[in-house]
Image (tube, helix red, strand yellow):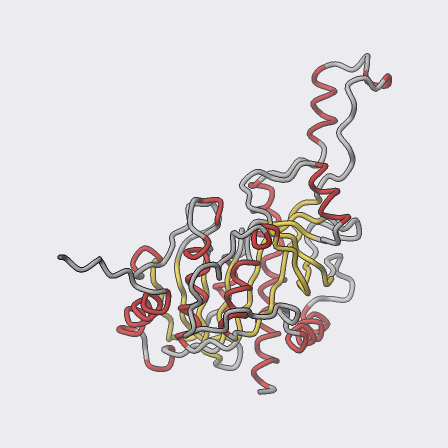
Length: 319
């Protein structure tokens, strides 16, 4: 009787990807200390990598690595140095559950980072602002999250535990590293002019599956549950990072303000004489658009870039 086919474990898959990457990497880049995941419109963060030593890999060339299909997510790993010669690896673009990837595949790069030797992962994303105090272009340090999919069982740690990476039941009450967040607040004062309209906040991120943007009723529900932001990424990666023992720093760029006002009623007497085009304008107000998200990312990229670069330089200077 033929033996059943061998299905490689998450650990075996990650080891294979690491072997491929290290095959041609310069020795000084083979064990990066920090990984940065660049979200929608934030691929410019790869420009923070400097020096003559730099290596790039298309995701499609790396064993088991998922490839993005969304505009604004290029799909390459960049190795190089940040700040005072801190070896780093950057993901320029990420994959999402809504693209059809499994939740395991979406989080696979984090396990690769762990085996490469990464201590800290910096995750960035674009999000919708639920908190009325947030303006488009503001940056939010995540300090907690709401993971509806995970609570319902769509969870990156579901199934046999990958003991090589972490324990069966990892706590997440300390998911967002307090010490790292302190460094970001200090870095903000160094690199962002005091008269800048852009502000830095801390807040709670709600993960939703996407790819449709949220309805007004859904936005009101999320806000009432304590969420300040809503988006379609990052949280599964954070869960796996903490399972691996990697310290987490997560920053979110507010690219649109979610609409919380109820939809106008069809029997509203104030609207009875409105034309179809006038009604359309009312419903269009605040509607999210992916191109708008990318444009807000482009406008904020320079500030986000400087903030991340300064924070990383400060963190590793004190280690």
